[in-house]
Image 1 (tube, rainbow, N blue to C red):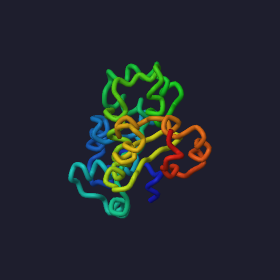
Image 2 (image 1 turned 90 degrees about the vertical axis):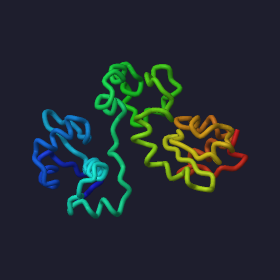
Image 3 (image 1 turned 120 degrees about the vertical axis):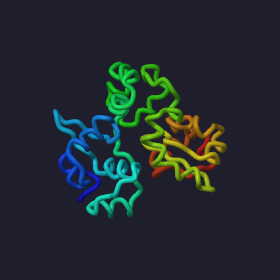
Length: 205
Protein backbone atom coordinates (compact mmCIF):
# COMPACT_ATOMS: atom_id res chain seq x y z
CA UNK A 1 0.00 0.00 0.00
CA UNK A 2 1.37 3.40 -0.96
CA UNK A 3 0.54 5.32 2.18
CA UNK A 4 1.70 8.63 0.71
CA UNK A 5 -1.15 8.80 -1.74
CA UNK A 6 -3.61 6.01 -0.90
CA UNK A 7 -7.05 6.84 0.37
CA UNK A 8 -9.75 4.49 1.47
CA UNK A 9 -13.48 4.47 0.97
CA UNK A 10 -15.69 4.11 4.04
CA UNK A 11 -16.35 0.50 3.03
CA UNK A 12 -12.63 -0.28 2.70
CA UNK A 13 -11.81 1.35 6.03
CA UNK A 14 -14.63 -0.56 7.72
CA UNK A 15 -13.36 -3.86 6.32
CA UNK A 16 -9.78 -3.13 7.44
CA UNK A 17 -10.91 -2.21 10.95
CA UNK A 18 -13.47 -5.02 11.25
CA UNK A 19 -16.15 -2.43 11.92
CA UNK A 20 -19.51 -1.77 10.35
CA UNK A 21 -19.74 0.73 7.50
CA UNK A 22 -22.18 2.81 9.56
CA UNK A 23 -19.68 2.99 12.42
CA UNK A 24 -16.92 4.36 10.20
CA UNK A 25 -19.43 6.72 8.59
CA UNK A 26 -20.31 8.00 12.05
CA UNK A 27 -16.62 8.60 12.85
CA UNK A 28 -16.40 10.75 9.73
CA UNK A 29 -19.70 12.63 10.12
CA UNK A 30 -18.92 13.44 13.77
CA UNK A 31 -15.49 14.81 12.75
CA UNK A 32 -13.65 12.21 14.79
CA UNK A 33 -12.04 10.87 11.61
CA UNK A 34 -11.08 13.32 8.88
CA UNK A 35 -12.07 12.46 5.31
CA UNK A 36 -12.26 14.28 2.01
CA UNK A 37 -15.73 14.52 0.55
CA UNK A 38 -16.06 13.76 -3.15
CA UNK A 39 -19.66 14.23 -4.21
CA UNK A 40 -21.72 12.14 -1.82
CA UNK A 41 -18.83 9.83 -0.93
CA UNK A 42 -15.96 10.14 1.53
CA UNK A 43 -12.30 9.40 0.89
CA UNK A 44 -10.24 8.68 4.01
CA UNK A 45 -6.46 9.34 3.93
CA UNK A 46 -4.61 6.30 5.28
CA UNK A 47 -2.54 8.43 7.68
CA UNK A 48 -5.74 9.89 9.15
CA UNK A 49 -7.11 6.41 9.80
CA UNK A 50 -3.88 5.34 11.52
CA UNK A 51 -3.85 8.50 13.61
CA UNK A 52 -7.48 8.00 14.64
CA UNK A 53 -6.96 4.35 15.56
CA UNK A 54 -3.86 5.18 17.59
CA UNK A 55 -5.50 8.09 19.40
CA UNK A 56 -8.54 6.02 20.37
CA UNK A 57 -6.60 2.92 21.48
CA UNK A 58 -7.88 0.70 18.69
CA UNK A 59 -5.85 -2.04 17.02
CA UNK A 60 -3.95 -1.13 13.87
CA UNK A 61 -4.86 -3.43 10.95
CA UNK A 62 -2.03 -5.70 9.84
CA UNK A 63 -2.02 -4.01 6.43
CA UNK A 64 -1.07 -0.71 8.12
CA UNK A 65 1.41 -1.98 10.71
CA UNK A 66 4.49 -1.19 8.62
CA UNK A 67 3.40 2.39 8.18
CA UNK A 68 2.44 2.71 11.84
CA UNK A 69 5.81 1.63 13.23
CA UNK A 70 8.27 2.96 10.69
CA UNK A 71 7.03 6.51 10.30
CA UNK A 72 5.82 9.33 12.54
CA UNK A 73 2.06 9.56 12.49
CA UNK A 74 0.84 12.97 11.35
CA UNK A 75 -2.47 14.28 10.13
CA UNK A 76 -3.06 14.40 6.42
CA UNK A 77 -2.80 17.96 5.18
CA UNK A 78 -6.00 19.97 5.07
CA UNK A 79 -6.42 23.48 3.81
CA UNK A 80 -7.38 25.87 6.59
CA UNK A 81 -10.86 26.54 5.16
CA UNK A 82 -11.61 22.81 5.11
CA UNK A 83 -10.28 22.47 8.65
CA UNK A 84 -12.50 25.26 9.99
CA UNK A 85 -15.53 23.91 8.13
CA UNK A 86 -15.13 20.71 10.14
CA UNK A 87 -14.17 22.27 13.47
CA UNK A 88 -15.66 25.74 13.85
CA UNK A 89 -18.51 26.81 11.58
CA UNK A 90 -18.55 30.34 12.98
CA UNK A 91 -14.90 30.76 11.99
CA UNK A 92 -15.57 29.18 8.60
CA UNK A 93 -18.09 31.91 7.77
CA UNK A 94 -15.17 34.31 7.25
CA UNK A 95 -13.30 32.02 4.86
CA UNK A 96 -14.98 33.03 1.61
CA UNK A 97 -13.74 36.62 2.00
CA UNK A 98 -10.23 35.66 3.14
CA UNK A 99 -7.20 36.15 0.93
CA UNK A 100 -5.95 32.67 1.84
CA UNK A 101 -9.12 31.04 0.50
CA UNK A 102 -9.32 33.24 -2.59
CA UNK A 103 -5.74 32.44 -3.56
CA UNK A 104 -5.89 28.81 -2.35
CA UNK A 105 -2.74 29.19 -0.25
CA UNK A 106 -1.73 25.85 1.27
CA UNK A 107 0.22 27.50 4.12
CA UNK A 108 -2.15 30.13 5.43
CA UNK A 109 0.32 31.70 7.85
CA UNK A 110 2.38 33.15 5.00
CA UNK A 111 -0.32 35.84 4.74
CA UNK A 112 -0.43 36.64 8.45
CA UNK A 113 0.50 40.32 7.98
CA UNK A 114 -2.08 41.00 5.27
CA UNK A 115 -5.28 42.70 6.42
CA UNK A 116 -7.54 40.45 4.35
CA UNK A 117 -6.38 37.43 6.31
CA UNK A 118 -9.47 36.81 8.47
CA UNK A 119 -7.81 34.73 11.19
CA UNK A 120 -8.81 35.93 14.67
CA UNK A 121 -5.65 34.72 16.44
CA UNK A 122 -1.90 34.72 15.97
CA UNK A 123 -0.44 31.80 14.03
CA UNK A 124 1.30 30.34 17.08
CA UNK A 125 -2.04 30.34 18.97
CA UNK A 126 -4.13 29.07 16.05
CA UNK A 127 -5.77 25.66 16.47
CA UNK A 128 -5.17 24.88 12.80
CA UNK A 129 -1.43 25.57 13.13
CA UNK A 130 -1.21 23.59 16.37
CA UNK A 131 -2.88 20.53 14.89
CA UNK A 132 -1.55 20.58 11.33
CA UNK A 133 1.97 22.02 11.53
CA UNK A 134 3.33 22.08 15.07
CA UNK A 135 3.44 18.25 15.49
CA UNK A 136 5.66 18.05 12.39
CA UNK A 137 8.23 20.55 13.65
CA UNK A 138 8.14 20.22 17.42
CA UNK A 139 11.38 18.20 17.40
CA UNK A 140 13.34 21.40 16.74
CA UNK A 141 12.48 22.63 20.23
CA UNK A 142 14.38 19.68 21.69
CA UNK A 143 17.60 20.48 19.81
CA UNK A 144 20.49 22.11 21.67
CA UNK A 145 21.70 23.84 18.50
CA UNK A 146 20.10 26.69 16.57
CA UNK A 147 17.14 25.29 14.67
CA UNK A 148 14.41 26.70 12.46
CA UNK A 149 12.22 25.44 9.66
CA UNK A 150 11.10 27.53 6.75
CA UNK A 151 9.37 26.88 3.47
CA UNK A 152 8.47 29.23 0.69
CA UNK A 153 10.54 31.99 2.35
CA UNK A 154 8.43 31.89 5.52
CA UNK A 155 9.27 30.42 8.91
CA UNK A 156 7.16 27.54 10.18
CA UNK A 157 8.86 27.75 13.54
CA UNK A 158 12.17 28.17 15.37
CA UNK A 159 13.61 27.17 18.73
CA UNK A 160 14.56 29.64 21.43
CA UNK A 161 18.26 29.77 20.51
CA UNK A 162 17.47 30.69 16.92
CA UNK A 163 14.82 33.20 17.94
CA UNK A 164 17.13 34.83 20.51
CA UNK A 165 19.84 35.26 17.88
CA UNK A 166 17.31 36.94 15.59
CA UNK A 167 15.99 39.18 18.36
CA UNK A 168 12.47 37.73 18.41
CA UNK A 169 10.44 35.33 20.49
CA UNK A 170 9.89 31.82 19.09
CA UNK A 171 6.17 32.42 18.75
CA UNK A 172 6.71 35.67 16.82
CA UNK A 173 8.67 33.85 14.11
CA UNK A 174 5.78 31.59 13.05
CA UNK A 175 4.69 32.89 9.65
CA UNK A 176 7.33 35.62 9.50
CA UNK A 177 9.01 36.18 6.14
CA UNK A 178 12.75 35.54 6.09
CA UNK A 179 13.30 39.01 4.63
CA UNK A 180 12.55 40.38 8.09
CA UNK A 181 15.50 38.44 9.50
CA UNK A 182 18.00 38.06 6.69
CA UNK A 183 20.14 41.03 5.67
CA UNK A 184 19.21 42.31 2.16
CA UNK A 185 22.73 41.62 0.87
CA UNK A 186 22.35 37.98 1.91
CA UNK A 187 18.87 37.38 0.47
CA UNK A 188 20.14 35.72 -2.70
CA UNK A 189 22.19 33.27 -0.65
CA UNK A 190 19.27 32.68 1.69
CA UNK A 191 16.86 31.98 -1.16
CA UNK A 192 19.18 29.49 -2.84
CA UNK A 193 20.22 27.79 0.40
CA UNK A 194 18.54 24.49 1.21
CA UNK A 195 16.56 24.20 3.34
CA UNK A 196 17.62 27.26 5.33
CA UNK A 197 20.81 29.33 5.34
CA UNK A 198 23.43 28.69 7.97
CA UNK A 199 22.75 31.29 10.63
CA UNK A 200 25.70 33.61 11.02
CA UNK A 201 26.05 37.32 11.59
CA UNK A 202 26.33 38.35 7.90
CA UNK A 203 22.94 36.72 7.24
CA UNK A 204 21.21 38.75 9.90
CA UNK A 205 19.91 42.26 9.64
